[in-house]
Image (cartoon, rainbow, N blue to C red):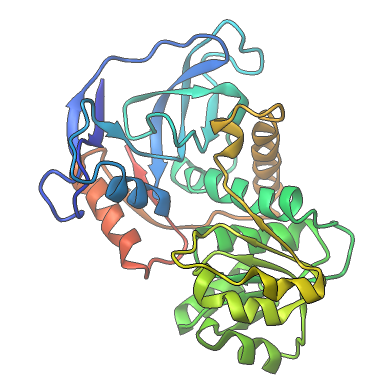
Length: 335
C-alpha cells in the first residue's frame, strides 16, 4: 500500500520533509481493525513529531504521521465485537504507532467509534483528536459538573481544540464560556462557535477583568503555558482548576497556585492508548457521544479548509498552514 512519512526531521520546505513510499498492508489481530482511509486532518502534533522525532538521524523505516482518520472497516481482529466489515468509523489514533497518512491503517478498535451520519468525511475527520482532548480536559481532568453555573476561560479559542471545546461546553453544560482571540476574524469565529464572551489574550488579565470577570472557575489553556502562567494564576478562582495541553519550555512557578488551593493538571489525549489504561474504551464512548451531538445538530464541524489528494504536495501544504499559526479551525485532506 501507499503511505507518506519521513525518515529524518527537516523543515517542511525541504524536499524530503515528507516522502511517499510503499509498505505492506497491515493485518488485523486481537482488538485491532484495518481501516481503508478516506480522509485525514492536520493537528499541531503532526508538525511537532515531524520536526523533532529524527533530528540528526535517519530512521530505518519511515514514520507515518496522521492522528485523525475516517474510513471503512476492511477487516477485524478476533477480539473485536463492536464493529463489522463495511462500518464507517472515525478515530484519533495512537502517537506511538504509525498514523493515518496511508491507504490502510491498523487501529485499536477500543479508541474508534462509528462516524456521524449527517456530515461528510472531511467534516467528520477534523473532530476526533480535538473532541477527545476537549472532553477529557473538561470532564475527566477538571471534573466539570454539567449542571453547575460556572465560568471557563479557553485560551486559544479559535484553534481546533478551542473551537470544539466551546461547542461542547455550550451544548452539554451550564458554563459561561470566555474564549480568547486577538484578530477580528478569530474573534468572529469564536462567537460563531458559541462563546459568550471573547477577550484578547495579548493582555489577558486586563481583558478578562474589563469584561467583568474578577476570577474564573476553570481555565483551559491551549496556547503558551509559560507566557500565560502569571495571568492564569491571578485569574483562577480560589479552589479553581487549570488544565493545559501545551508543554512549557521554561520552568513555571507553581507556588503561585498554593494560596488559592488551585488544581493544575495536564491533558494528553494519547495517554489512554499509549499506556493501554483500564478505561481505554472510554475514548470510543466519548467519540460516540460526539457523533450523536453532531447528528442531533447540537454541535457542528470545525472544518475551515479542505485539501484534496493523498500526496506529498497536499500534506506539505497542510503542514505549512498549521505551522504558520494563523489557521482558524481545522484542515482536512480528502484522499
